[in-house]
Image 1 (cartoon, rainbow, N blue to C red):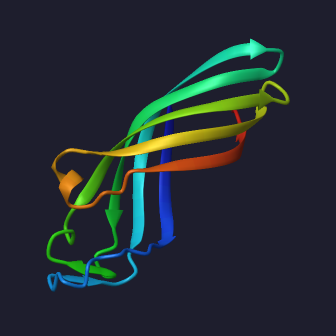
Image 2: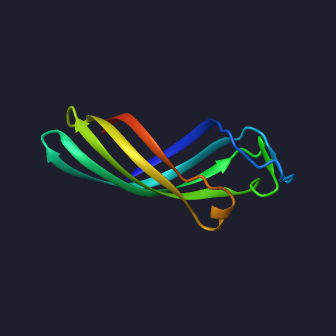
Image 3: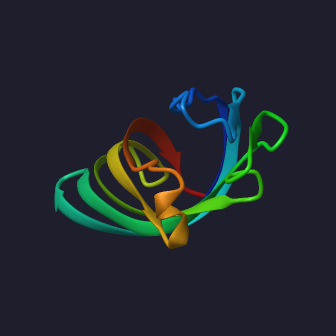
Length: 125
């Protein structure tokens, strides 16, 4: 199991100018998530990893002033695939690709599906 907390920088949103209900600032996103992670060792220090989970993303209400999104949070499902190299029993390197998809009724409000590519160092306690 893995948990995450994140806070993004200022996001850019494009909203059609024909819709006067939207007044877009530069929102800041924040949220948390929980993932189940499985690994499959396949050669010496290498492992294939897969993950599945959900995350909740909220936008800062002070910088996003819309009639629709002001009190909404997006619930996103995610799937990921990656490769891990273990330098030792407690230290490793990971390269991952994750796909995020909106879940629930907020899908029509904002289409924020996307892919995330990451490189990281992992330390096990």
